[in-house]
Length: 349
Image (cartoon, rainbow, N blue to C red; front, side):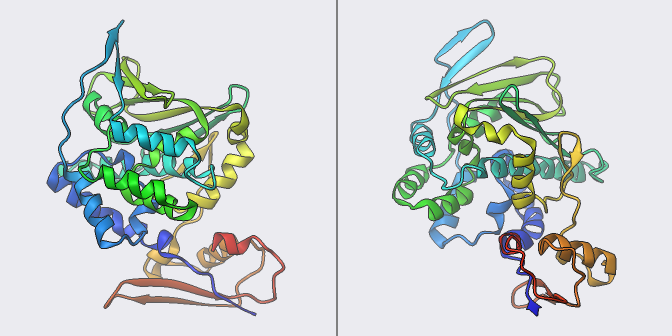
């Protein structure tokens, strides 16, 4: 039987798209990449959406003033459009609530990419050996925590990245989301880089602890998504960012290790950095279609085929196809030795 393992643009384009995007962001001194996610980079937006996305990154936003201040903690109101977005998300913008894990892990990956870019620009070691993502489940407490050792955020960046959708095109984004169906709404959220708010589909509250590597003081951002958020200093914050999500009673399955592992393998297996779940690395299969053909061993092909096809079979034959012009295409074609009755491989392909 001939089996084509389809490597969609969502997977194949992301590793190549990230560097050029980071260079563009660095040149414009734009906000950190904390809210951008890898999957969104490989989608193909319309001209109008691309234009609006550019405005999201480039428009300066006035710094909001705190509503109250007590004991070192300041309370802020979400931007008006952000409140509307939170209302949309709370009414299950996504058809599959599990994608909030994908969004937060992808944000962590972007923060690591931003740090690696900063190291390259400064001539520091950019090997990435210490760059990783840790996902921790606490079923008893009903929490899920995603921690990265990336660029981190300052207080001002927390306000701009988590409390504001920094764009003159925000009104258009909210209007589009209101009229979108489940599938198109998911795509729109990705294009506009506001996937962080998907946590409020499943969580009663969220705490973000962060510190920039070049800062001595970190900050704790917290919100229940009801319209306000608070920020206070966190002296013991480690460099990077940690997102602790307190799950709603009806979403406690996302604090179970097996369920989180399933979601990570489905969406985050080909992230460029190690992803650990409760101390065990999850993404052990490389995105081999992005590599030079000569550098890929037979064993690499076997492991990749068995993962993507969810089988223990050996591929009977393979074709690694690359084209550089007029567009960059990288694809793998495998033939299976026997027909497979497995029904899950299509979901991974």
